[in-house]
Image 1 (cartoon, one colour):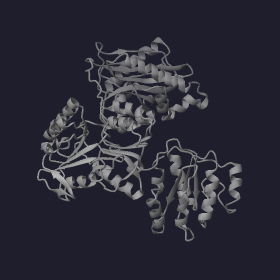
Image 2 (image 1 turned 90 degrees about the vertical axis):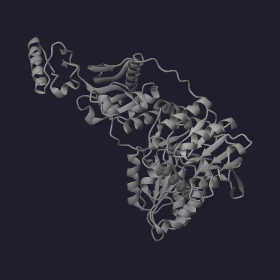
Image 3 (image 1 turned 180 degrees about the vertical axis):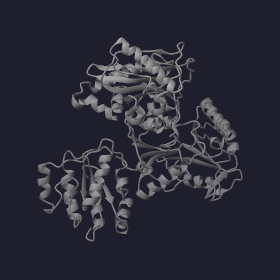
Image 4 (image 1 turned 120 degrees about the vertical axis):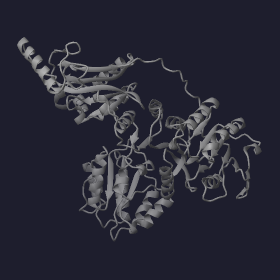
Amino acid sequence: KIESPRIVHKSDVGGVLLSLCDTASLGRAREQIVQNIADHGILFNADQDAFIASEMIRGEELFAGVVDDPIFGKTILFGKGGVLLELYRDVCYIDLHAGPQEIRRALRTTKISRLFEGYRGAKTTLDAAVNFIAAFQKFLIDRPEIVECDLNPVILNDEGFTVVDARIRTRDVPPAALCPPRSRTDFFDNRTVAVIGASLNPDKVGYAIAKNALSFKGKLYLVNARGGNFEGREMHTSLDDIDDTIDTAVITIPSAHVLETIQTLIPKGVKNVIVVSAGFKEVGDTRSEEKLLSLAREHNLNIVGPNCLGYYAARHSLNLTFGSGSVQPGSLALIAQSGAVLSSLMDKGVQLGIGFSHILSTGNMADMGFADIVTMLEHSDDCKTISIYAEGIQEGKAFLDALRNCTKPVRIYKAGKSPEARKAAYSHTGNLSGDYPMFKGLLESIGIKTVDTIEALLNPIAYDLDRIAIITNAGGPGTILTDYIIDKGKKLYPLSEDDIRTLDEILPSNWSRNNPVDIIGDARSDRFEAALKRIDSMKEVGMIYLLITPQTMTDTADIVKLLERPWNKPVYPILLGGEMMGEALNYLHQRRICAFTTLQDATSFL
């Protein structure tokens, strides 16, 4: 093979010839390669170029590489290799400091991983693959000057892994700047709140936030330069008029006055600042955001925003958003970069009867980002699950660490799945890294669920629920639902002979005798109830879908009342139809029982 600094992919220019068995063929191959690269406009230069002859090793071609990603830092890619690497794109993404469990999860996302589980007699185990990646990690950690590395191909055979070809790019590494981690105060500890920019004009953001804030159970101060009275509360003309400590402030005034307002708040003991005001980085004013960050670091402030929708915390009935004022308390924490997306999900939550422990609109994330918020939510007893709508990720390593250390279920929707990928013509790794594939791959290796729709951020979290049972009064929708479940990588519960016999006792003779359990179109609430009782008692069933379609005889309103009972397994109703389902849906929403109206939504959280 040719070795030249001007040639990246040797095979593309005829720079590799195989199965050479003697000196004569070696000489002929050398001449042929010189001619091949000349045909591609590259003239052999004896001062720069050389030839490498190595032993032919046969086996499966794999690939391992590392890219220094601007968001996530050094990240390993591993998977199917060879000249068709970029065509297959069967690779996984592994953080440079990932542990064995993360590596295993990542490997299992590739098709090539079946080789490590004995496919067609393959002898290499998954542990051996993990050890290979771990050795590659150590190689890279010990050599911080490496910023790009392609091992392609890595040959896998019964002897293990052999690196056949490698390309490495290095650079001088300056000493790491010492930036000690921030020791933040608890953002969710809100006792005395000031709304700065409260307004009497219903068309203003300051009016909506002030009105929503009236339910706060702590001390609330409203500030407006013109003064006035807001629904029986005095509006102070200046912060100087407030002779009290203010721990939390929301700012809705024009951006030009935000920095000086924060400086006025600092002597009053402020720790948490929500900057709703727009007019910062999103319009090109990065300097003001840098000053916000400097203030946060200098005075140990928690600053959310700017350019955000606000903040909600159920514990103290604190709603500092200009979204819905009808938010209900619950156990779901919802974080979103987009205020518009967040307000729509808040409103949807009200309709579906979903309650929230916390709602945070991160906006431009000048200071507090996803990593900080997830870490704080991990220590909040009010929060049981976390949903994140993300557009851009900052400080990717810190984000991964926060997710690793979080014991609560987390799911994420990532917008911008198909941006123009970063191109690095010098490397397979650069071409494969991209934005969304790496984001999704790294999160999957940690065990974090990514969802396909923003509505799924409100749905139940079912990470470990498998062996799904479907009870339906219509075979067609049950079949479609099965396809959606399988596409999500989940499995249906296989009915045993005993299960079929016990269902025979309570179902018509022409029921499906299979899962989906089709209890026939004339099923009324009594038959749904009988089937639900039997399937709920089956020990190995993980969860149950109750799929209801509107036949003339279907008493949907009575069927959904079954969902008020305490069942052993999670039961999720799907009400397909329109007008005939209205009463039943309203019944479920009023009782804050999760219900779905499409098969796609019903499986979006799997």
